[in-house]
Amino acid sequence: MELNSKINELINSGKDVINLTVGEPNYYEPSNAAHVAIEAINEHFTHYTSTPGILSLRQAIVKKLKEDNQLDFSADQIVVSNGGKQALYNTLAVLLNEGDEVLIPTPAWPSYASQVELLDGVPKEIPLSEDTGFKLTPDLLEKNCSPKTKLIILNSPSNPTGATYTSAEFKALVPIIEKHKLLVISDEIYEKLVYDMDYVSPLNVSQYIRENSILINGFSKAFGMTGWRIGYTAAPIEVSKKIAAFQSQTTANINSIAQKAAEVALANFEIQHVAELKRNRDILFKAIQEDTDMSLDDCPNGAFYLFPNIKGLIGKTYGGQEVHNSQDFCHILLKEAGIGITPGDVFDAPNNVRISYAKDLQTIKTVRDRLISFFEGEN
Image 1 (cartoon, rainbow, N blue to C red):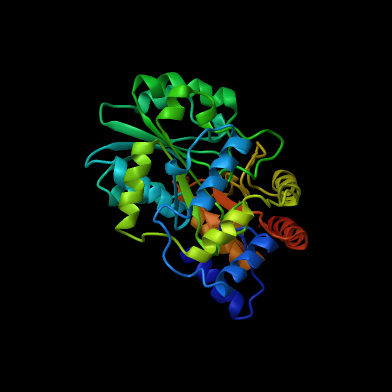
Image 2: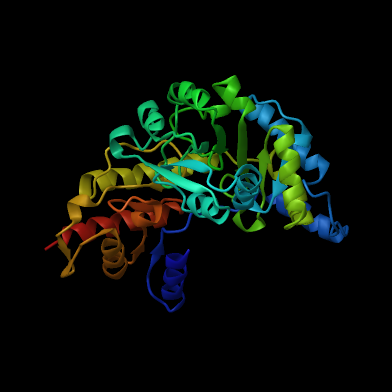
């Protein structure tokens, strides 16, 4: 977010910069959801609601989980929060005691570890690599479990890698998760943005995981509603009650108007966004593979990020500037090509960079052309 702010300052000062740092789609909320929000204001639906969210929205989420994910929940198991970030924090707050270990496969969204630390837990990172497609393997999971390990955070599709697990890959982890009696937090915020395969939740592959998981999702990515701040948890009833009680002492209910919009948005996902993002992914993936010094062997199946390796760039010069690390490369690319991307250090992957392709087609083509020109100018 700090880098995003700096890039926006450059843009506002008139610099020709394309910002590919922020994890935000380039489309907007469904139009009928916006209209319903306006109606809610006009009808003065502007007072407190119940802390876990209005019943009709929670029922709509239950319906979505049943129809889209084949998961059975009741409305009492749903708590609607101020974005997926609060949903995650609520969950960790009610589950963690001081010293509890939380397994975090990395590269990962940096808020995972930070929130665990805020709550006196111990984040235990499991470094992944391109060798496994940035996916956790049973051996890696087993090696990182200890008597203090309480839960694991799974994120599929992944931010920042786009890695998306198959049913078989999740099933392979089940015996270790059961053996160590781990709780599972399944961050499914990108579930609708999946390409060339079907989405699978870890809750679908095992009764144990289904009964010992907290599913986290929201409206930011799939529905283009980042600023509306709507996320939710679906959890075992006793956990859900504690999440609601915790939230009642922090924010209480989320924005009443946003809840009305979310209820309508759920039934109006615009499927063309998936095709547009896949097209963008393919354009940049091809350019990175064929026309740059970056390395990207596998095309990710989800989210809207590419996560190429830049280890081969170390020691090379571009525009007369030598690359020593991913931060150097990002600064040079910004200065020389007007492209803003995120250094992998942020995600505990110093040899990689994250590139968001959630842009319109013309912008993606411009990025492709600038990347090709930039690497042609290597000296």
